[in-house]
Length: 243
Image (cartoon, rainbow, N blue to C red; front, top):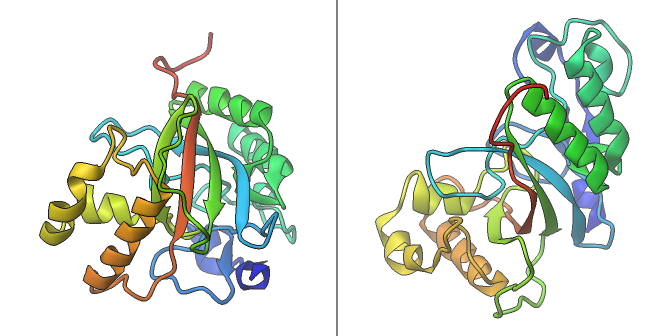
């Protein structure tokens, strides 16, 4: 299945003119939301790495549908370039520096998933200086329903399991079906099973919820979802600014 997640960089005039573009489209996947970079499998159906997820204090949800940090083509991308790296389309400055760090530290050159802890923490610190608060979260991503455990993970920092798009806008079935726009039937059957982070403790329960969500949703029923096992590495800084 790795071939279904191969990516090609697509740069267009609209992106350079100011419309946000996330750098790639996933070949073979179905997406109704904005496209972002994808990553190849380290094994046929499993990926590992660190994500930076924007802190949101409006509700308890701590899953991946929180505007993950990655290089983007937006209104600040004003440099003409033939490069394959999004950072090269940005003028010199902190944004280009952090985009380049993400690109150089990424799993398989796809910059929403950072390979090692140290560059992820460095990105978090530098982003906070510019008023952007991100949690650093380690994730294990599965895109097929392998044998899923019915036991809760007990390791320190475990947040829970999310069910969301692999790339795109990381649309979460949990966030959009139980928290932000709760469906009455789904809420009746699953809301009480959410943990304090708005996620499911077990992979088995997360997959069962995903199946129910796809049967209920009028717009997302045919979409492909991935399972994210999430562990908090470093919470978003409580204070913002240079030391």
